[in-house]
Image 1: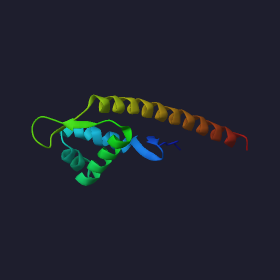
Image 2 (image 1 turned 180 degrees about the vertical axis):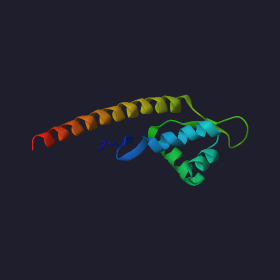
Image 3 (image 1 turned 90 degrees about the horizontal axis):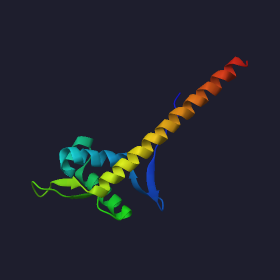
Image 4 (image 1 turned 90 degrees about the vertical axis):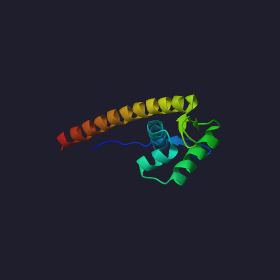
Length: 116
């Protein structure tokens, strides 16, 4: 048995950023384009564009900028990289907490079996 968590950032009930958007930006960084990132993640360009734009609007800063090498080339902004790094650190800490909590729960349940 494992304790699992989902972690996202929200404001006013609207998602700002989460694992899906992190994966989208990581894929964009690898491929250099939103179309390539969408293709890699098996989603439509329109869905990827909508999520990206919604996050930028809600966060109040740009996550991508036009890159060199063509009209569709994109690169992450420094703010996007800071957000990704910070979110990844918080996610790692939360997952570590969940693993420890799961271990304690399993130990408590195992100790209860011995009391029968």
